[in-house]
Length: 251
Image 1 (spheres, rainbow, N blue to C red):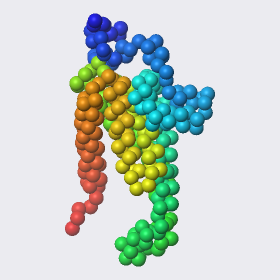
Image 2: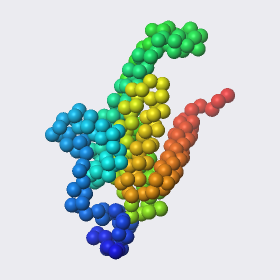
Image 3: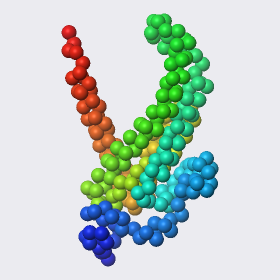
């Protein structure tokens, strides 16, 4: 049975989560509150470390159940903090793995490539600065990627199924999907597993939260990635064009 949006009075389908006209949440407030929630919501009582541990464990052990039960809402900064924490953890794990498994061969190769114009000490110092920069930049880059990808999926959902599109809920899904950053602790294939896990968790979260078919969720995820890469390419080309205009002409 169709129903009307309490905000704009537009008719909505029975299975719509949000008004396709104004975006007002049609899910009953009590229904959303009845969700079990996730440990990260209770971090003020549990402590940040314990809440992060239990939330990460829940995502890894039972992702389907997790993405069905987190409470949606406009408090997306709560999940953004989770993303920042796990981005820093991922960068730390990455740095530790590099330091543990670099026997000096990589540094020697860098010195040789630069025709011995730099010393091993200089390369080692640059290593440390790069690791520090990675810890600082990783959260920023991940947040930018999350906003771009969430926005891309939101726009595609608005186009294909407006009643199931909500930017903040999608952003929460991509934030909790950053649990995959823990894979940086795995040597060699850790980086690949991070990206595969991030995409996999996000697609699963979209599927479970919005009641989409597996095929539709996968297509939505892949097409939105291409759309996001297109946006990033346009931004990079625009920045390059601006910077190029300030540079002196090549002779």
